[in-house]
Amino acid sequence: MSSTNKIDWCSTWFNTDYYHLLYAHRNNDEAELFIKNLILNLRIPEGAKVLDIACGKGRHACILSKYHLKVWGIDIASNSIEEAKKNSHPAITFEVFDMRNVYKKNYFDFVFNLFTSFGYFENEQENDATIQSISENLKKKGLLILDFLNAEFVKKNLKENEQIIKNNIEFNITRKISKNRVVKKIQINDHGQQYLFEENVRLYTLNELTTIFNKFGLSVIKTFGDYHLSPLNEINSPRVILVAQKI
Image 1: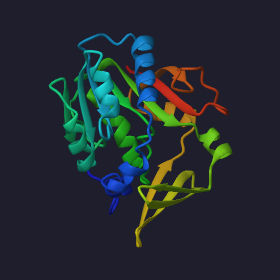
Image 2: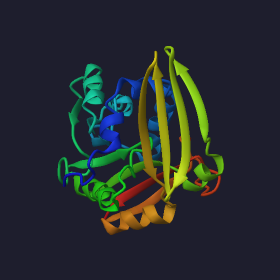
Image 3: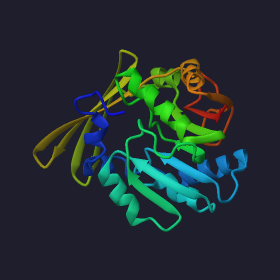
Image 4: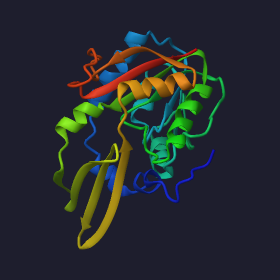
């Protein structure tokens, strides 16, 4: 399917150099730990076919490939994929692709959707289409691993205002919850030039996520609350990490 939104915020913001500068602090050690824990917990075998959906610059895809997996990474942001390809090698395929569409039907053993890369679209049918496509990408009995924000934790700990300065560029950030979505405005002052971008992500409860998964033939078999794979506490866990199997 194609987007019904006039312009998806993710198509614009994720393609800017400012996005990559703002999030350059993302911790590779944390990502390494998370992937290692998943590999061990889920007993992911060497040679498994793995799809990293909304892969960005390929941070997690590159780590996955270290475990001798066959890895594909897709993202709607062409700039991110260009960067990902710079670190690529024959075990990884990176491609510009919209996660609302089916990439390779009934092909993958595992699909990863990490670091809050779901709930982007205001039209719920488009978010549903993402899960439906993920299900269709998976082989029967294949697993989806979805790493998402914990709605209750976010509501309790929302930081409404923040200023970050990087490379003498000023990022003034405001956050609010509106219509069950986290809306983040990023006002940028780049040596006198002003820019405004937005992140806008749907808040889902565990029950809502489980319902969507079931709708498209995915059954939740494991839940975790952080990157150490601690038990999920729906109030206090910083993350909601779900493992769902294609029925």
